[in-house]
Image 1 (cartoon, rainbow, N blue to C red):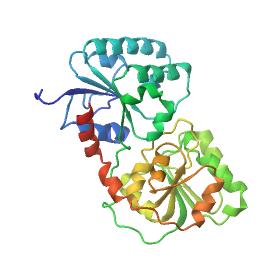
Image 2 (image 1 turned 90 degrees about the vertical axis):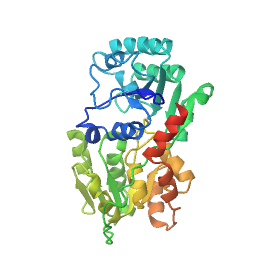
Image 3 (image 1 turned 120 degrees about the horizontal axis):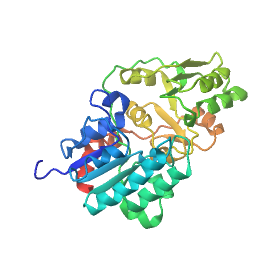
Amino acid sequence: MSENKKRVYIYPMVSAVDLEVKHPYIFNLSNALKDKFTICNYGRKTKAGIFDMYRYLGKTDIVYLNWIEDIGRGKLSYIQLFFFIVFIFMAKISGIKIIWTHHNVKSHYESSWMNVFLTKFLIKNVDKIVIHTKQSKKYISEQYWGKMIYFFHPITDLSKEIKKNKEVKYDILIWGGIRRSKGIEVFLKHLYTNPNYRNIKVKIVGKINEDKLKKEIKSFLTPNILLEDRFVEDDELQLLHSEAKFVLFPYTGESVLNSGVVVKSLPLKTRIIGPDKGAFKDLADLGLIDVYKEFSDILTILQKNVKKKNVDDFCNHFTWNNFGLFLKEQI
């Protein structure tokens, strides 16, 4: 180990060959940290959940946790919970720092008392809480605010990779993996039942994660709404964005704080509309995007022509490399 490099264990970890595709956040985080820290489990898939951490007791200086609250589900959740609590106290006794990122208000999966308990336990016992939106403060007791370190969700700039298509074909683009917390079926129902949206053209591109949801979405389709049920590749994002006046994130899930897709859309400079919550509220407060409180607000936003602030300075500051430098100073 280099004398000046601290060792860090990142949870969860995916095998090196699958990392970029299966877990882009952990891939980008690892790349941001690897020349500033020694990542002791880089590219080694997390096995047996919590028990994987025990292999690195005495071999790491920092344990960096992401979505750890999701262990509160499944058949082995009680066992995982017990050994996780034991691990945290063993790590603290050993002088290992515990870092946790507050990604969501609660688990995207079915919530339980265990998820709630885990979140409270983490807030109380970790050394630092990384937050990617200032809205996290609403969900963390004031007595623990001193643990929080803020850096907006790091942005990957894809804007220079593809030439722009000058023809605007749609009023709204909705893209990214489709699950219930994304609110697409709720928004489409709103369109379907509101005649004021009759002439609004919408393109939806993303893989739907369940058959029942797919059936619901298809029941609200009209000739002005195009659905492409497929994965979206990064190298087509600029073309997709250039075809639309707005990109919309109709999130309805209570768990949403941050969005990996909004930080890909932001540097592509198509105007963004999102819910008045989490990272979207942060961006709206800076004058970078539009937000809605109710779906009925969206039509008003579509009809007004208000130029948003240039996003370049913001995107150039909140990069993954700068996030790595920030973490080096903070932890």
